[in-house]
Amino acid sequence: MPQFSGVRVLSAVLFAASALAGDVPAQAATASMTPPVQVFIPSTLVATASGPTLTVKAKGLETPGRNLATAICKIRYTVFDRQGKALLMYPNSQTICAEVLLSVNTKRGVWQQFPLDLGQIRKAGLAPGRYLLSVHIAMSENQNGEAPDLPVVVSNTANLQVK
Amino acid sequence: MRLVKHGGDLPGQRVGQIAKALKEVLETNPLTPALLLEDGTTVRVKRVKPEFVTVRHNFMALYKGKIKARTELLRTGLAASAYIRDHDGMLVVNAQDEQRLASLKQQVAALGYPDDMVQFGIDDARPEIRVDVQWAEPLSPLGGLRINGSTTDANYYACSIGTNVRFTGTANGITNPQGFLTARHCTPTIGGYDNHVFYQVGRRIGKEAIDPRVISQDTPGCAGNESGQVSICVRADVAFATYEVPSNVGRIARPFESVNQKEVTVTNGTPDTYAVTAVAPRPGLGSVVTKVGATTGWTKGRVTDDHVDIGLTSPTGQKYVVLDSVLMGRLNATDTYQLSAGGDSGSAWFIRNASNVNDYNVQLAGIHFAGNSNSISYFSPVENIRTDYAGLGSFTFCVSSGSC
Image (tube, rainbow over all chains, first blue to last red; front, side):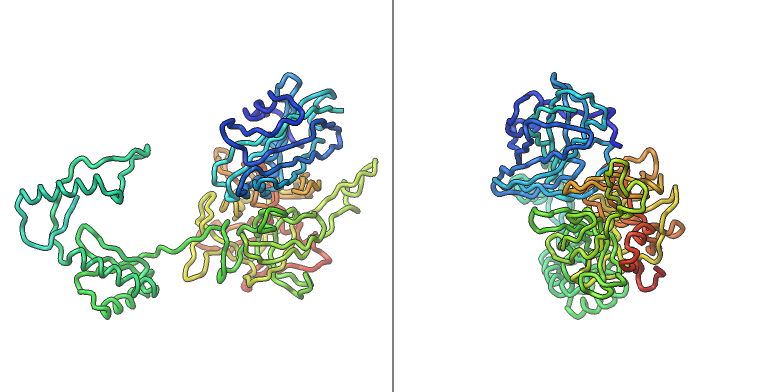
C-alpha cells in the first residue's frame, strides 16, 4: 500500500496551486520556458474509496513535435487543502509502478491520455471534505533516461471532493 | 611544443622566428585544439618554446603512409588502428590480435613502406553498441535490448527484451517457435491477446503470441471477496512474443559489468552475451541476482523477499495483482545506484557464477516488471512463469548446451 508520509512538494506544484482556477492552461515549472505540452484534468473531481480513475489529457504544443518519454510513476497528482498546503502526492517515492516507458508526443494539436487512480486518496486516510488537486508530468528528452528531465508540466487545478 | 626537423642545425635567430610564427598561428587559427581546464575555461597560448627532434621521415611521408593505411589496412580489417606518433616521427599500425599481426606485417612490407617508418602493436579496441538503440541486421536481438510497441506514439510502451526462448507448442500459428519473454504490461491488455507488434527501436522484430489468462478462480484473494469484487491476478507479469527475425535461444546482451552500463562490445560482428545454461526457479533470500535492462543497463541486487504480492496499474489503467514475486534491493545499504526504472520492464534477472567472473554462463531467475525507479525492483520468478504457462506449452530457456 502506498505511503504518504514525507511527501515531497515540487515548487512547480505550489506554483500551479496558486492559480486556484478551474481550467487554467498548463504551466511549466520554469515560467520562462514554453511547456512542450498542456495538461488538462476536469475542473471538478470526486474521490471515493474505489476510485475513480482520473483521465489526464495532454495536448502537444510544439512544431515539429518530439516524442518525449515519461513513466507511470512520473505522472502524479498532489492534493492540497483550500489554503494551498500540499497534503499528499501519488505516486510518490514509495510507490511501486510497472516500469514501462510511455511516450508523450509534443506535436501541436496531438492529444493523448493517461490514467491515474484517485482511489489512493481515500486509502491514504484523507478526511472527507473539499480540497484542490493538480497533476504534474515529468518527462525526459529520450527513452535512454540519461537526458536531464524537462521542466515538470502541471495541469490546471481542480476542485476535489473527497467522500 | 616539440618540432621535428629532418637534419642540419638551425641558428638561434631562426628558432625565435619559428616560435613567433607558430604562436601567431596557434592564436588565430580556429582549428587550433583548445586546452580546457576542469571548470571549462580555455587556456590561451602564452609562449611557444620549440624543441627540436631529429626524425628519419618527414611529416609528408608519414602522412602519405597514414592515408595509404586507411585504404589498404584499416578498410580491409588487417589493421585495427593507425596513427602518426609525433614525438619520434613514426607511423604506428596496430592489429586487433597476435594472429592478425603477422598478416599485417606481411601486407605492410608488400605495400612498400620503409622498414624504419612503421612500428607495430596490438590494439584490441572493438566497437560497442548500446542496448537502447537499434541493432540492425546482421545483429540478432538479444535479452536486454529496448523494444517498443510502435514506431509512432500510439501503443508506445517502451520495455526490454527479457531473454530469447523456444516455445514448445503452437503460437501465432507457428509450431515450436523461437521468441522472447517480456512483461505483460508491455502489451495493451493484461491477460488478453492484442496482436501487439514489437519493434526494436524502429525495426520490426516480432509479435505478441501468448499473454496467459488471468487467475480469477481457485486462488484465495483472486476469486472475489464478500461483496463480489474480483481481483485480476497473475502469477507472472510475463508475455511471450514470437520473433520474425533470426534469434539465439538463451542469449542476453552482456554490457561491461559495472552499474548502469549499457554498452556491449562487438567482436567480429558478434556481441558479448551471457548464455543461459540453467534456471534458478526462485532464488532464495540474500541471493545476488543480476539484470540487464534497456534503461538502467547492467545492475545487480540482492533478494530481500521471495513471495511478495504486488498491486499494479498498467499503462492503460488496468489494475492487477502479481502474486508471489521476488523483491530485490540494492547490494549494500550504502549503495545509491538506480536498480531499475521505467523501460526496464521485461528484462531478465539471472545469477552469475560467483566463483569465476569470466564464466558468462548464467542461471535465469526471472523477468522484471516493477519497481520504485530507485532502490526496489520486482521480478516474476521462472517458477511462476512455468505455472502461468502450464497447459499452454513449455519454454526452453537454455542455449543448446544447457539443461533447461
